[in-house]
Image (tube, rainbow, N blue to C red):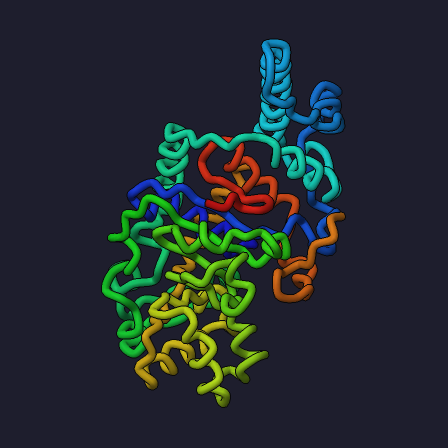
Length: 362
């Protein structure tokens, strides 16, 4: 989910057209080892009652009495939705710890609430991101923000540096290849099991720009739920190491598998850990060697550090962890309730739309 948050945040200031984000398939808090530091704000009795009370069935159309009942139902539902959203917006992960069931309960209730985009909140959020992180210039490592001969500090291995030699410098684009892409609609597609049977594929593919994470499958029968359009896909170097033996072999298999992504960008964290660098560079050189249509680009560590600092200032469903398997994340790498709470806040503010369940068919 960390990569998804980074991408969603980057869009706020990177894509100048003011993208409406549709985050599909985020796994609802299926992490281990997060209990020590997860939490949210205290919930008032009024909000708890709103969360726990069953949603009334909408009345059938008919006479004036039915119309009046319909108005009452809409008013009650709007009041419940406002109570839920107010609670999300006032939540603080430092005040109280909540189990994942708490967030899942909120999500189930939010499914009955109409999402409203609020351009003023989007503009404000984009401005905050531009001030803190400057995704337009810093999201991708480029020759403009990574001088030849400089020593770049790693994002996580911050005490370690890498000398930007001429060979490395030539691997970087002159400027960010994404800075001139003003799109109206974007889809940041996670790999959560909630995408199964969602019928969201058509809506995802209808977006102007589609982000995916960690080389997920998109072909075959699953495409009706996840789509197959891909403009950018993140690549965790561990996948290259485990599945393709760091491209010391299996290059052909790797190239055949990524062919489904067309001419998408492959985004790698080459400068997050020193152990990521060689594998990330191998991906770049393999694409060059075989003249692949995909293009490898790298997160800039300064951007990721700034983004992490920005988020620090913010504050048991039967679903598989992924829509294609149930391999859980390593303990300690994610604090899922914290991350999910942040995305819920963006949804409640009308900055992005979090797709919880099935997409509406045309």
